[in-house]
Length: 392
Image (tube, rainbow, N blue to C red; front, side):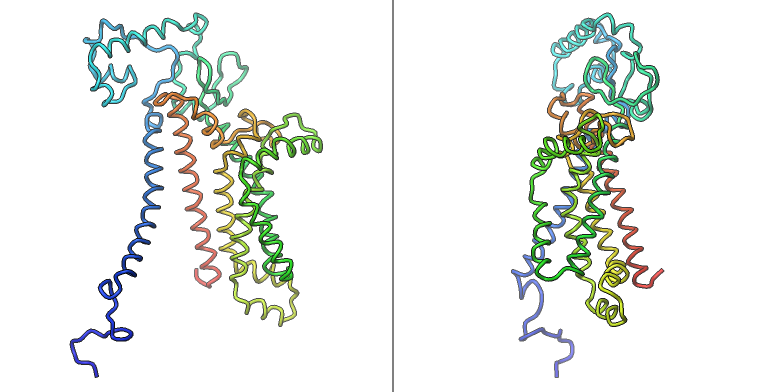
C-alpha cells in the first residue's frame, strides 16, 4: 500500500520530470525551440519583405520622370519633412546629413531634371506616378499605343509597373504544370501503392523520387535547348519560349513531390479496406479507385497543395524557358512569372528606388496569395476528413 499524500512514482521508483531525466527534458525543449524558430523565421521574412514594400503600398513613392523642383536656395523656406520626402531619404539618413550635403543632393536633383530630353517634357506620361495602384492594376493608354494596355516595362525613361501580366504569366505556367503533373503523379502513386508487383514497386518508386534531386537549372537547360524546339516543331506556334513549354518543364519539378506524398497517403490506408473489398468480389482496380483513393483523399489533396506551392514558387525553370511578359491568356504566347521577374531584375535595381520597392511588393503579394491558398486548402482538407469520419 502506498501512503496517503505521496505522489505515485513511475517505473523502477523514479519520478518523471526534468529532475529525473534532465537530458530528455533538454532535448524536448531544444526541439520545441527549433520548431518555434522556424515559425519565427517565416514571420521575419514576411515582415522584412512587407517593410520594403510599404512605401508602394501606401503611395509614398513617386516614379514620375518630371517632378516639381525645389531650388537649392529655397531649402530653408520649406519644412525639413518636405525636403526629406523630396530627396527620398529616410529619417535616419536625413538627420545624419548636414546642410551642405543636403544642398548638394538638391543640386543633383535639379541637374537630373534639367537633363531630361525635350521630347519627354511634352509627354503627358512623364508626369505620371506609375507606382499608384490604378496604374498597377488597370490598363492605361500610354503614348504611342492605340488602346489601353497592361504593360510591365521597368526600364527606360518612363517606367511602367502594371503587375497584371506577371500574375497572368504565373497562373498560366502554374496551371499547365499542375495539369501535366497531378494526373501523372497520382496515377503513378495509385499504381505503385496498389497495383504494382513488389519488384516493380522497388524500381519505379525510387526512380520517380530521384527526379526531385535534379537541379532546377538542369531541367531548365534541357527545356530551353531540347524541349522548346521539339514542342514547337509539333504544335507549330511562333513564340518558341512560352507558358506551355515552361509549364511542361515545371511539371518535372512537381511530379516527385505530389507522387511521394500521395503514395504515402495511399499506403497508409489500412490493409483491412483492401482485403474487405477483394473479399466482396471487387477487382484490384475497383478497390484502388473506389475504396483506397477516397479514403486517402485528404492526403492526396495535401500533395496537390504542396505541388501547387512548388510550382508557383519555382524560379530557375521559368526564368530560363519564358520570354518577356505579355498580357495574353494564350498558352503559346510569351510569359514571365513573378518569381522569374524578381530573380531577373533584383540585381539591376537601386536599393530604395521605386523599381526596388516594386519587386518587394511583388514578393509580398505572392507570399499573401500563397498563404491564403494554403489556408483555403487546409479548410477543404478538414472537411474531407470530417466527411470520411462521418462528421458534419
